[in-house]
Length: 332
Image (cartoon, rainbow, N blue to C red; front, side):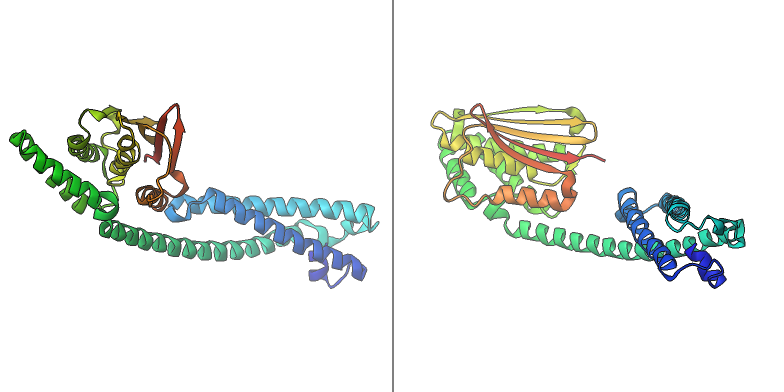
């Protein structure tokens, strides 16, 4: 009726408060349905991965909300003019014909279309800028990881201990000592060359982990028992480099090294539906050392957040004298 008043110069003889109320309702309905349209677009459209079909989805949502808007307003008019205004006679006016109803729908279709185009454009630019900032942050984080390689990932204490242990091993078993030096050099080469990559095959990471454990066994000998349970279907899955190595290092450094009798570290991987589960369990208690910076755990959490957002999770718990670290990564 408000639309009819506007195009017919109040031929319906509405009171001021009546058409004011009609305009107010139209205004509020417009705000409500554009807000709901925005929420639906955000729910069903991935702005960071737009495809051609998304245009059809947006058009479908637009038409759907226009229809809901028209139905809601029609119900309001029917109720209000019959029971509040007591003006059922206006429904016989020529302005309530099919032509004006189609004009009403066309008018708000254009309005919703312009609003939707503006919103999608602004949202797309925001997501583009957000993606660029995330990439820059990731690159910065990877550069920082490189600079902190010897401090947090293969730390100086590990290097000094390994070299000292290999030196002592030379007096007992020269061949094994030579082999350990080769493994140590491969470990360092991997650390320095792979830390600037976003992803590597899990199989390559496992090779590095085996080398790391072999070097650690020089110091711990029989005190360190390492077991693996690897799902063969996970070997080619891409993961952030050195993420498993950091879990193993944390398990040995804060778990096994604190136990006089030593203990066990168990690494397992499993693919469940569209998710990769990496679990490292070690004998011990979840006790944070006073001099611990937890740099390794912090790096893991930050890299998972930057690479996968909320789709990846990291959990560290203690149960039955075991400390269990679990990483879950989405698999494409």
